[in-house]
Structure formats: C-alpha cells, structure tokens
Image 1: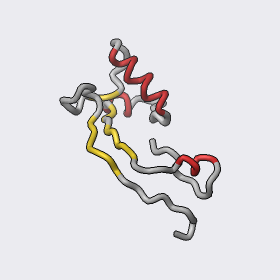
Image 2: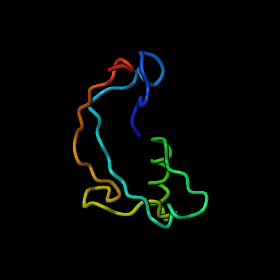
Image 3: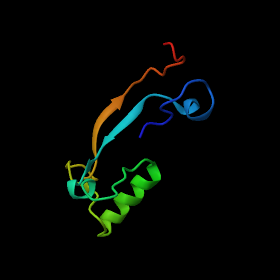
Image 4: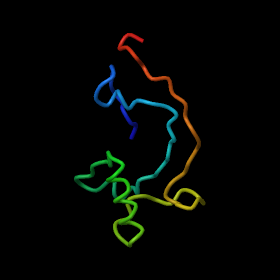
Length: 89
C-alpha cells in the first residue's frame, strides 16, 4: 500500500505522494491466498485488523517471516522516492 499512488497533480491522492516511504514486508499464508474469494488487503486499517485478529487466535492471514518484535513484519529500511509531477516526466 503506497500513499498517493497513482496520481498526478496536487489534489486527491497525489497530494499525499511523499517520501521517504518505510516499506514493511508481509507474507500471505498460501492457504488464505488460494481460498475462493480471496481479496488482498488494501488499507492500513484492514492490515491492522488482520494482524490483530491473528494475534488473538483468528485466521492466520500472514506467516511469520522475521525475528523482530512483530514476527509477521520485516522492515528492510527506508525507500526514498522522487514523486512524478507530470504524466510526461
């Protein structure tokens, strides 16, 4: 999920298109992805809800992938971006 992507101009989502971005990597459980009706998570709120539900014994949406405080997330670092300011850039 990337804030403001895609978009051009200074209104709507493009107004939020800023760097640096902090990338967080999660790995879906293949059983969840292969289930009929699977829809990927597309918002911060839904991601937080899925992680919370899993920590409380709910569906194992993600697999543990790190030794960090939250084993469901890996933090590879900061990504600096250069936002496009024109569709012709």
